[in-house]
Length: 357
Ligand SMILES: Cc1cc2nc3c(=O)[nH]c(=O)nc-3n(C[C@H](O)[C@H](O)[C@H](O)COP(=O)(O)O)c2cc1C
Image (cartoon, rainbow, N blue to C red):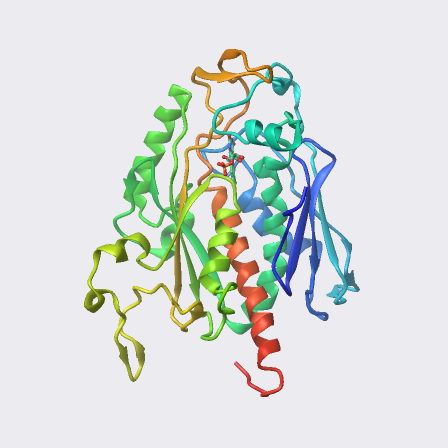
């Protein structure tokens, strides 16, 4: 199974399955002398793990990150960093009953077609559990980009069709769904309650903003910053669309409406979402991700088993109502990884010129 690595200089490789011993990440290319301890991971891991929001699953994991390699006396050494997170709250019993059945909306059918087998215990490698390793890698990436003043913030701008009308960044943490509009957040809370009782799920839209990104990051032509961002975001389960800046709405505009005029103090608007020609322009990078309703629902659904026989499936077990808000720290982490990778590549490009940002 290939495809487990991402990045060129700051390169991550994740490993592990939902109901295996644990999951983790190897980070190659992290510079030396960065202070790093197991405590550094606690805040980020707590934001991703289930239990913080009424939309979450009932699985409870400690998500303690163990540093296995690459750190000596509290500092990175420049050698591969291995981070390991044990799976402690595993209950595979609900999956025994459905081990030969393909769950609609899940990766069971396609994994079976590709590998001839499915890890039915919580989806194995396709499980959102894998994203804990990405969040841990994001903590290390943040250690590279926060000293240069880059801040990555994600929040919910729509959930179950309810839209945030006002975006007050300082209100995000007051909402269990990380929604910057408290009125919208209250409506979402009521909707979640109804949807949970119906045994159904909802999706939404998450916006991620990169503040303080220097101009010049991105490698035309195939490793454009927006191309790598799109790949990073689309590699997260349940993401079904990515927009940069005005995205799909720009298709409806005229050039005179869409262009960002440039003045002596910089760009006068930011329809481009902070990227031009695949290179950051110094403005905020604005990304939107469309998140589908999570597939595990307790409503009855039509499917087939491995022999192709029709089955009426009614899932019983511990399921989320939405991947939002848990997906937000994952998306933030992926963006941090992209920015860290491109920042290191930028420094390499400019090495001989002695260019400093
Ligand atoms: C943070 C996060 C949490 C998720 N939680 C669940 C969940 O509780 N139940 C579920 O059925 N799917 C959940 N998903 C989505 C599935 O993992 C995903 O839909 C499935 O693997 C199929 O992949 P695809 O939607 O990208 O096609 C979650 C995804 C993420 C990123």
